[in-house]
Structures are given as structure tokens and as C-alpha cells.
Image 1 (cartoon, helix red, strand yellow):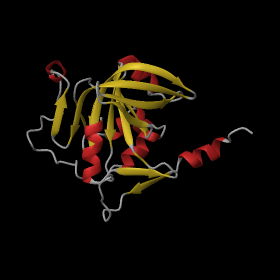
Image 2 (cartoon, rainbow, N blue to C red):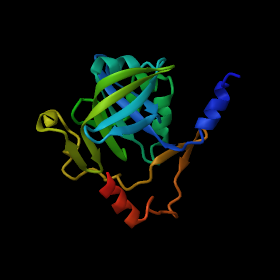
Image 3 (spheres, one colour):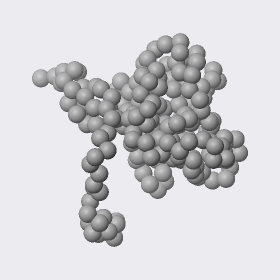
Image 4 (cartoon, one colour):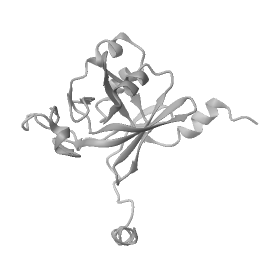
Amino acid sequence: MAIEKNFFRQVMGRFATGVTVVTTRGSEGVAGLTVNAFCSVSLEPPLVLVCVDLQSVTLSAIRESGAFAVNILTDQQEELSRCFAMSSDERYTNFCHAAYHVAATGSPILDGALAFVDARIVAEYPGGDHVIFIGQVTAIGAGNQVIFADEANQIHATAGKQNGKSADHSQRPPLAYYLGQYRHLAPGYQQPSLPVAAQQQEKSSD
């Protein structure tokens, strides 16, 4: 029996994720799309993974630039996520009217994002109806703190140079996605994933 597409989506939709906007800068300007297929891959070297639909108009710009930035959205950026998920002039011509800075690669770092990862593509793999990009991190940031992989990556950066004038959004709750709908996290329950003793034992065994 074949796996039915809609049921596959229903099952995978039960894995709650954050929401990101993946951005890049091609020869025709800046571009972006909403993505929830994003994860870290490696700590040494620092690598991240994003999956992009083969039908996405942003795909060619990512390939051309050889770089992308992952902007992790806050619960106040739902409309931005919706805009970058739609086919519209607002998205393609006006970049959803989103203000941004740049870090290492020139890919837009959206103002007000919870955090960002700026990366250069080191590998591309086929993934059915998607493309899997592996990016090596060149800059990373949350709030008003930005860290670069090396000094050469800071030459054209404007992210992190607002002289403390911009608001720190790093403590806002993230925008979440579950069962095909946007969700906001309830602030009432917060517990460490492992007891302190277990965390220390895990670190010592690595």
C-alpha cells in the first residue's frame, strides 16, 4: 500500500517545530521563504541544514549566492512568516517590507528575529521534491550579540552594530508550528530536559 500524501503530512505535522524565514541575496536582489525544515547538523565544524522545495522561486537565488541566512521568528512575526510563504508581489518585489541587516554572507538578517544563523553552502543533496542544503556557519546571533567565525566575515557586516539602539528580542517566545497551524508557547511550564546530574554525566561521557 502506498503512503498517502495527506496522511503523511498529518503524521509529520505532529512533530512541533519552530518557524524560520530563510533568506539570501542573488543577482536580482534579496529573496526569502518560510521554512520549518531546519536543524543543526554538527558542532565541529558548525553546520546547519535547510530543505527547500524544488518549486520555490527562491531556490535559484540560494544556489546562485551559495549562501543563506536562517532567521528564527518570534511569536510577534506570524504575519512575516505568512508573507514569505505566499506567492505575491509583496514578497517577490518588496521583500514583505521587512527591515534587515547583513552579517557575513550578505543574506538578509531580519530585524526583530529571535536569532539568526548565517551560512555558506558546503553541500547540496537531492531530497525527493525538496533540495537539502548543508551550510557552514559564518556568523550567528541572538539579541544584540553577534559572533563571527573569523574576522574576514565582519568586513561588510551591519548586524550587531546598532550601538545598543535596537531592541533585544532574544527573550521573546518563538513562533511555533503544529498540525498545520501557528502556535504560541505557554509560558507557565519550564523544566530542564535532563536533571543537572544527568546533564553532567552526559557531558563527561561525550
